[in-house]
Amino acid sequence: MTETHHTSASDPWAEIRPYQDDEVAEVLARLAHDAELLDALTRYRLPRLSRFMPRLSRVLASIAIRREVRGVTGVHDFQMRIASYMQRMIRTSTDTFEVAGLESLDPDRAYLFIGNHRDISLDPAFVNYALYLAGRDTVRIAIGDNLLKKPYVNDLMRLNKSFIVPRSARGKRAMLAAYQNLSAYIRHSILEDNHSIWMAQREGRAKDGIDRTDPAIIKMLTMARRGRERQASIGEAIAELRLVPVSISYEYDPCDLQKARELHAMQTSGNYEKSEFEDISSIVAGITGHKGRVQLTFGTPLSADFDDPEAVAAEIDRQVLAGYHLFPSHFLALEALGEAPDLLDLSEVSDADRARFQARLQTVPDDLREFWLAQYANPVLHKAGRCR
Image: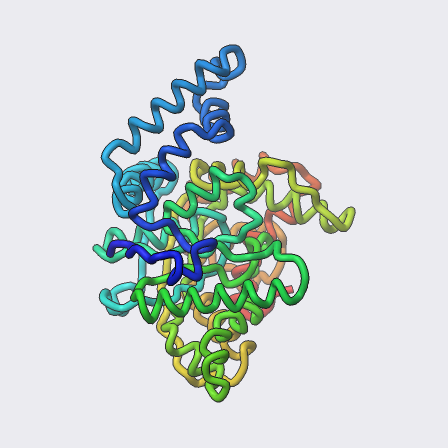
């Protein structure tokens, strides 16, 4: 599906929507000369040269970018370039990637996919990859503006069909207007453009392994329909968006140690300060780190039988939990914590699974172990309705 061009008069979402085909060339030219992006690339790919000959390393990075995007004339071309990297990443950092439930969804209809949130870039990337493998169009991805502080990150994300969720608007009135605009964009994408969307069930990753939907997101999603039609129920507003819960389960989370560190800081000192490049390094760690097996499960579209946002959130949670796949790492963590022995199912756990788990656990500092283990054990407890 190609992105269509809107004139500025009929483009109320110009500030938040993904880039369109006719904007791609200009954005790519800008990226090839963005000093911050060039520095980030050279620090990562040419660390010694960037230290001793920064100007030369920038020139080389700029040439590399231009060469990489030669022949890219639109959003689809750009995503096809990403697809080859995605295939390589899956080959090198995951043992298996399995998809369930997609065959039950109409390939010609747009859906609003709402998923549990474990990784900033990988959750939607795996959804996109599953759709790509099935010959379906990729999704537009909701991303918080807190992750887009650097202009080059904003450009890269919007080239990859991301749209911006406002989190930094100041004041109640500005925030309300921003959310109404966002709600209208999502509804327009599904109903008018017939273009699917992915968004997380809550703001921020579930660092403790407990996946819960924030009802405030449901409220935002229904604003556009209920703004036009006061009588419309929450259920009607949700049903027309064809909301489908999605569960993603990683055998190992490449950011598990960093999440444990954050949870430990929150418990011991009450706050956690992110370093300047932490979100970017989390994205890189997620993409490159070993994930073991990954399972993605698509649920079924929600009906109109809901009276309030909490009921919708509860149904999303039910489907996410039902579709969440438990791996040996989850049961081994529960065993290590010594909790809920009646929930332990070690029938699928091989000696190799145990050795891999122990080797990984050995790298976790003692003061972080409980937080690290809880991330993996909590999905078992949550599925059984026993989450702390």
